[in-house]
Length: 477
Ligand code: GLU
Image 1 (spheres, rainbow, N blue to C red):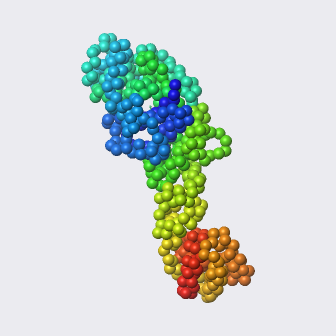
Image 2 (image 1 turned 120 degrees about the vertical axis):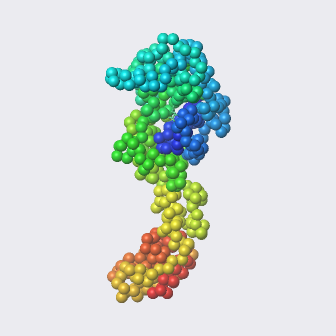
Image 3 (image 1 turned 30 degrees about the vertical axis):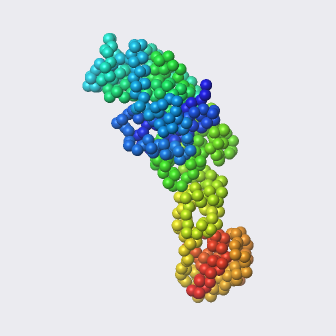
C-alpha cells in the first residue's frame, strides 16, 4: 500500500510555524516513501472561516516548496478536496451509521442540553450526553443535530509512532455531534470520513488531538474501518520555555519571513529541526537531503524550542550556498550599478543573515557605492588633532600614490596587502597611528561615518574610482 499523507488546514487565518511544520513533516514523509501528499481544505466551520485564507495558505505552502499532489486546484482521484463540497459523502456515511443504530437525531432543544450541563456541574460530575440518550430514536430529517451513538464505552489504547502507547478512558467517549443543525459535519466526523475516503495512511498532527482520539477510534470501529497510523508532533515552545508562542518566536505569518528575506529552503531546514533531527553534527540540509533522512521514529516527544537565532544562522548558511548571481536574483537585490552590486556580494554574505538585511545594507552603508561622497573636512581629520590636518593630507597622498601604481581591480585582500604597510609606517612614525591613515581613507571613500573597511570599499569601487574619491578629499584638505 502506498503512503498517503495529508495536510488539512481550516481556512481560519494564515499559516504559522506550527502548522507549517505539520505540513512539512507530512510532505517529507510522503516524498521519502514515494507516496502522495494531499492538501485538503477543511472549511465546514463556516463561522470561523476567514476570507482569503485558502489562497494565503496555498501561497505559503508553495513558497516553502511543499508541493501537493492532490488538492482543490490540481484535482486528484478522490475529489473534491474542499470539505464543504463533500457533504453528500458525509451524509451517506451518517445514513449508514443511522441504519446500523449508531447515530440518532438529538431530540433536545439547546436550552435543554444547557440545563443538563448545568445540573452536572452543580453535582460536580462530568457532563456526558450519553447519560441523556433517548430510549427511542426519532427519524432524522436533517434539521436537528445528528449524534453518534457510541457503541461501547471502554478504555482505548493505541500506538502512536512518536509517543508510543497512548490510552484514554471512558470519559473521552460520548455521543458527540456528527452533523450539525446547519447540515455541515463537525470536524470530529468529517475528517475521519475524508481520511477514509482519501485512503490516508498516516496522520500527523499536534498533541491537542490526543484527547479526542478515542472518539475517532470508536467511529472507525462503528464503520468497520481501519484507522490510519497516528504520529503526534511535539509542541513548539516559545523562547524561555513559555508555552505560548509570541510573534517574535513563530506565531507570525510564514509569508512574513518571505518579506523579511528568508530563503524557503532555510525555513524548511529550520522547521524540520523543530522536533526532529537526523542525528549527527550536520545541521544544514537541502530539501532533498531532508527527504532522504526523514523518519517518524526520530521525531522527539519533548517540546521543541523555537529559537530565532538558530533560524538566522541557518538562513545565513543557506544564503552562502548560492552563487553570486543566485544571491542577487533570489535576494531581489537591486542597485544602480550591477557590476558593483556583484562585487558587494562577498561582503553581504559575510555581514547579513537575511536578504532583508542585505537590502538595508545596500540602501544604507553601501549607498556610498553609487552616490559620490561629500566628506566633511573636520571628519576627515577627526582622528587626530586639527592642527595636524597636514598629516592626514600626507597619509592620503601616500595611499593615492600606491593606488595609482596598482591595477584597476584589486580584491579586498590585495588592497589590504598594498595599504597596510603604509598604515604601519605611519604608526611607526608615531603620527596619527594606523587609524590616522585608515580612518581618513575609509571616510574619503565612503563619506559615511559607518561603512565597510577601506579595503572592501576599494574592491567594490575599483581602483580608478577610489583614486578619484581620494583626490576629491585631498582637494578639500
Ligand atoms: N482542520 C483541522 C485543523 O486545522 C485538522 C486537524 C487534523 O489534522 O486532523 O486543526
